[in-house]
Length: 453
Image (cartoon, rainbow, N blue to C red; front, side):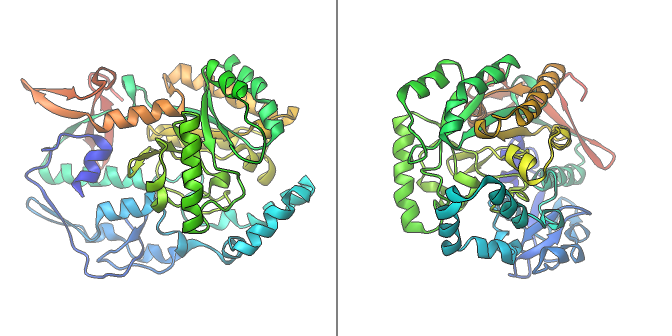
């Protein structure tokens, strides 16, 4: 339980040696409950659980936290709940009948068989019908779910209050004290998207943004060595996008193992570090077979993705040896063709919420869907807005591979006391910054050492 908190904040390992957090879980039932007014959790809880997410409000675990001297007793296992949310282990309990039907193998095979023959307008009408209830989904929270991050803050606050600690040092989330992080990624779906890659790189470059390109290695289009070299020579990143994007990667374990071996082969062939599955399909319990360094297939909240769910955090996290960089902003295709929204208002709303929590702002846009002037103009507006906030707020705007490397080195850093002062030790420590979590009434406030937040 404490280790989960240590991993998130990188606080000193002996910060709460005098405090004994324990778990009181009388029931083995797993279900939904709340911790406070808005934080829906999934796991075992002594306060009780609901079998359906809509009943979570009947069980508020925050009312059953017990304190006795140096002992804090939670009615649930903090680490278990965090893992359940990040790994989307609640998904089977929130899937609606329409999604269950659409996810069956016969339906998927039929859709992908006739997809190429369907007119674009027909496909979009089918997709809008599928997503028609997205506003009614109560969990994860739209447009950004911060449950995992809020739980960490709440648990740290409990420990501080119980120990009488007013200020706890930790290693800041991003290098050089950056307030938050930004990554841009482009999934290349078709040969038309591949052929417009150069123009998209020109556009990104004109606004000072570098991005990663996720390329489908089989069937969709040819991937020439010259294409790969052009992306990398211009300072962009080349990653693998599924195997053939047919929607069946995770359908069955034996076939998945075969396909994963082929994906690993392409990872090594192209010396790629990152991966994203087609249509954001995912099963984090199977990631142990993969040999890439980081994944980008898990949305923060997936109301507008074929596979619903979401990891409920705006921070990277480890899935075994793989770093997960969650998608935290709505995709361009969903914005344009599901919501019929040709503004950047929703993106700005999501970015504001993420920046308030010092999180990762991550985007997927597609060269395939930015060819027409209307969509391209919206994307230019986004780039212009991103350029402004990056410059004004000194946001860390980098490639996904840079975030992967940083999250790995940060996980190896430690805070030690030297002569009454805190010192960061570990690889690339010169990039890290000391920060403090401070109690401000019933709030937890972050501040960089020597700088007010």
